[in-house]
Amino acid sequence: MGNDVAMQPRQVVLTGDRPTGRLHLGHYVGSLKNRIDLQERHDCFIMIADTQALSDNFDNPCKVTESIVGVCRDYLAVGIDPTKSTIFIQSMVPELFELTSYYLNLISVARLERNPTVKAELQQKSFADSITAGFLCYPVSQASDITAFKATLVPVGEDQLPLIEIANEIARRFNRIYNRNTLVEAQAALGKTQRLVGIDGKTKACKSLGNAIFLSDSDDVVKQKINGMYTDPNHIKMSDPGTVEGNVVFSYLDAFLEDRDELEDLKARYRKGGLGDTTVKSILADTLHTLLSPIRERMALIKDNDVWDILTSGSAIARGVAANTLSEVRDAIGFGYDKIRK
Ligand code: TRP
Image (cartoon, rainbow, N blue to C red):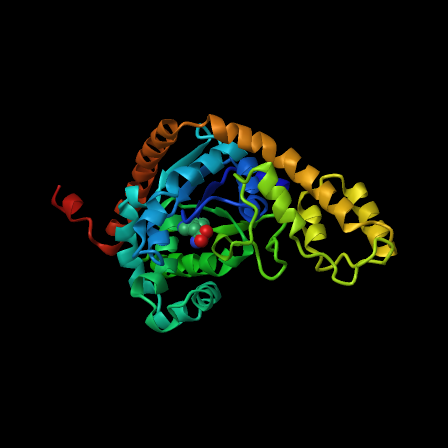
C-alpha cells in the first residue's frame, strides 16, 4: 500500500496498539511506517488500547498502565507527530464502552468464537477453557474504536483483518436495523512487510514470545540478537551454497535493506557459496543501526511529562469525536430522550 493509499482523498485513519511492553520492528514494518506516511494527508487517530490489553491482563494491570508512556515514546520517536496525529488512551474515552454495549447485540457468540485472531490468541495463551467474556468480546470493543471515529482506513498487520471484518459487519447491521447511515465501514491498510519473523525463525516477532528486536534496544542488544539468528543449518563452511528462503537474516534484510540491488547481489552470492553468515549478519547490524540510532536518540530526549501532556490533550480531542458518534448512535436507536423533550 504505502503511497497509493497515502494519495487517496482525505481519509479518517484509526489504529491502536495494546500497551503490554515496548514496540518492536514487527510493529514498525507492519503498521508504524504506514502511519507516518498517512498522517501527512489524513486525519489520524492513534489509540493506546489499555482497556483491550486489560482483557488478557486483568490480573496484572501494572503491566498495562506502566507500558503506556513507553508505547507513546516509541510513537513519537519513530516520527508520529502529535500535531498531525491525535494520540490518545482508550480508557480516557468512556463513550467507546457505551457503544460496545449497543454493538454486543449485533453479533453472535458463535461468530466471535469463530474469529481466527481470537482463536490464535487463545492457543497462545493458557486460558482456553476459561476464556472470559471480556476477552471473547474484545473484537466488539475494537469495532467501537473504529466506528466511533468513522474511520475509513485502519493501518494494521494482517493478523487484524478478521477484526476489521467484524467491525464492518457490526456497522452494516447497525445501519440496517436502525435504518440510518450512521456508521461507516473501514478498509485495512496493510504494511509492506506483513509478518516479520521472530529472531528464532519460528513464528512472527511478538513481544510475548521474547523473539523481537525492540525499537528501544541498544546497539549491543541488537547485535546480540542478530548473532543468535537462525540462518541456514546446512551453510556450514563459507564456501557452501546457502539458502535464503526461511533464513531469518535474509528475511530481515528483505524488510529493512533499502538498496534492493545490493540485496539481490547478496542473495545471489549467498546462494552460490562464498558469502559467510558473519558478513551477512554484520550488514544487517549496520542496516538496523542506521534505522534505529536516530530513533533511539529522539527517544532519549522525550520527557515523561511531555508524553502525558500529549496523551491528555489527545484524549480530550478523541472524546469529543467519539461523543458525537455516540449521540448519533443513541438517536438512531431512539435513545435521544433529552432531544425529544426539547
Ligand atoms: N487489536 C490491536 C492489537 O492487538 C489493538 C487495537 C485496539 C486496534 N483497537 C484497535 C487496532 C482499533 C486497530 C484499530 O494490536
